[in-house]
Image 1: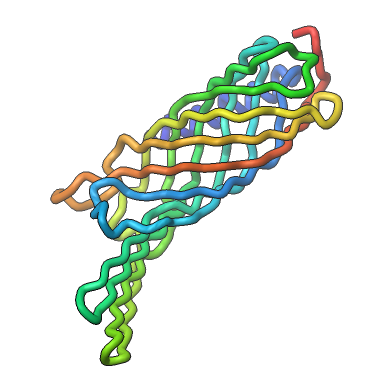
Image 2: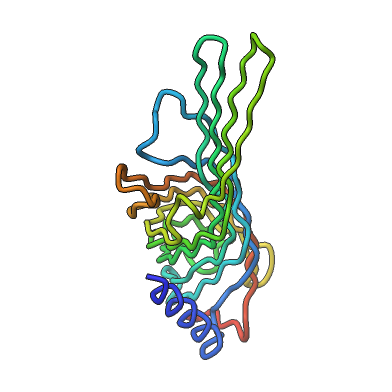
Length: 221
């Protein structure tokens, strides 16, 4: 699977180099809520995170584009439970190099300033690190015990899933666009090293970015 990711990155880099017309590149950042399936539903908590990186899009024609993102993604899950006077908290931080590849449909015409969009595609993740933090707090005794472990010891190094999203691009200059996105990522692979369970990633995100043209912009295409 890592070879697939490497080939995809080389392909997009080559696309931008060989045919720079109608290729756009720019920074992106998003705020996310992530969780892990297979864990307890009753004590799962809101788990904020983020993604930062860059996005690349090649416009095949005025309505269709293909591209991908290269992101650092903070994901994982948080769970809390209270039994009597004791509170249990478990926080799993999974930091991925996340590479979603996307096919995008842009509504409207090329000259429109406001262009809604829909997109979908596969998403690849390489685990770069993170920590598993467990805390046990007894309110009656006033005691608190905290332990930490490396996420790479318990979770697999590769993740595969799919991303779907919607949003809009708003033109703020010649071939320069402000991008707004709402997306959902659904993991398909088992991310845990344990044979006793099957765990997979889930993620909702809301993001902003700006893309700029590379090379000679050709609006007729």
